[in-house]
Image 1 (cartoon, rainbow, N blue to C red):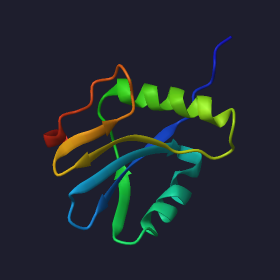
Image 2 (image 1 turned 135 degrees about the horizontal axis):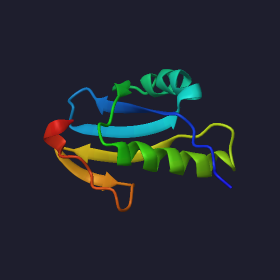
Image 3 (image 1 turned 30 degrees about the horizontal axis):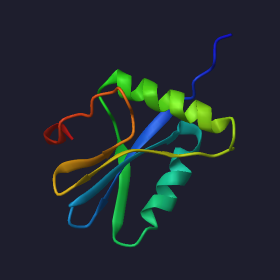
Image 4 (image 1 turned 90 degrees about the vertical axis):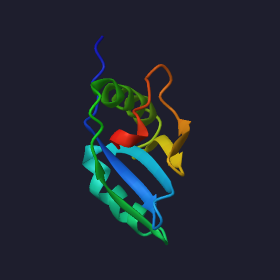
Length: 102
């Protein structure tokens, strides 16, 4: 049986200094709602973001599909950067992109 993978969209969320950056994914159907919530966080800005690596997109789709079996609305934290270096990456087996390309 083939599982249907949801369309996903990504957000880049950063503090005002740009020292702390987070990358989140959400089903595209709920993405605008997520952007509103993320932009309500004091001192943070959220904007749509595109990962160029299809492996990242596929991994996020798979992860979100798993989570949607348990919840109606989900988001997943792809990774985070502090002071220009990766401090978190949650897609096991998928190489994280170079910070300079983000």
